[in-house]
Length: 144
Image 1: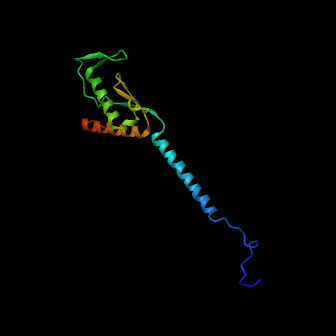
Image 2: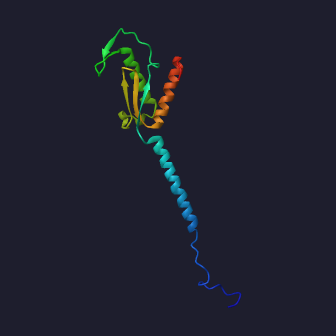
Image 3: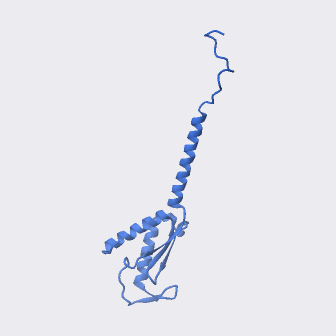
């Protein structure tokens, strides 16, 4: 064997080209996919119930006109109309596709006795609802 002859294949160890880099790339891709899925799940995934007191957002009422609520309690008409209006505004402006009327999983239940809304939706929707109600409180002159 002279200096010009190629090195025999038996002496040169076989190298898999790019296998280590490919494994590392695949691992990074899998970690990124899991992180993305976890972020999506935290943001959009679980449906959580949250109670929002809105007595300070709806206008003061005078007991001129009252009616029975579906739960058998007496409710001023102005209060019921105001709560229905806030519910409708939330459903139309905050992630409209996430509400049950449009095929989503979110619901809003108006609780007339203590003037609160019981909202079941994901965290992203709850964040936006809290911002909307804080803005309404500031407009009404109350504290957020």
